Image (cartoon, rainbow, N blue to C red; front, side, top):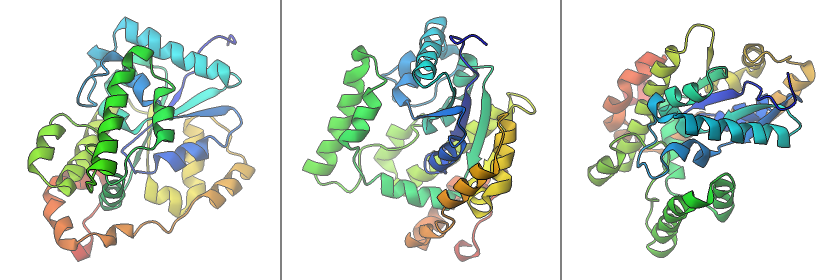
Length: 292
C-alpha cells in the first residue's frame, strides 16, 4: 500500500450516550490505529443547513465523496499513516451515505439499554456546548460553513446562560420531524424517539451492507466482561489483541453505571415505553419489572 493511499477506515456506529466514546478509546489502544473523535461537520458537507441528520446515498455526490475521503487521507497522513477509527454518533441516521463514501470500510454497531441512554441524554440536554467543544467542532469545518455552527452555539448560550432555561434547544440525533415534536411533546418523549428511531434506522441500514461486514455488540456486555467482546472487535477489525491491551482495557472500563436511570420518575418512564417498545424487542432488550 502506498504511503498516500487511504487505508480502509473503521466506523463505529452507535446512538448518543451508548458507549461509543469508551469503545473508540479501547480500539485506539492498538498502536496501528488513530482515533478521530466526532468530526461532525465533515459529514454535513453535503448540506450543512439541513435541519435533520438524515442523509441518503444520493447525498454522497462525487464532490462530497472526494472532499470527505480527502479529509480522511489528510488526517491519516498527519497521524503517522495509521488506520483511522472514527466515531460520530449522528451517523446512525446516515449509514447509506457513509457507506457510499466508504464502501471498503469496516463497520461496528453498538447498542445500549434505552433507559440508560435516555437518562444520560436527558442530562446532556441540560448542558450547553462549551467553548472547547465549539473549537473542536469548527476545527474540521470549511470557513464558508462556520455560520451554521456558530448560530447553534449562540442559541445554546442564550437559552442556558441568559434565559436560564433547563434544556438547550437541541441535543442528539436530529431525526426528520424533531423540530415539530419539540413544540408539542415533552423532552423524554423526544429523547425516547431519538433512541428508537436512530437505533432502528442504523440497525436496518447496516443489515443491508451484507453478512460479515458489520459486527454488532452491546455496551452492557462490553463493560461487564470486556475481554471476550474486545477480542471479537479486534478480530473483526483485523487487529491483533495483545494481552497488554486487554489488561489496560479492563482498567479503563467502569461497570458501575447501569442503574443511573433509576433517578428518573418511573411514571414518566412508563409513559414513554410505547415509543421504545418495538425497538427494544428488535434489539433484544426487555422492560424492567419495576416499569411493568
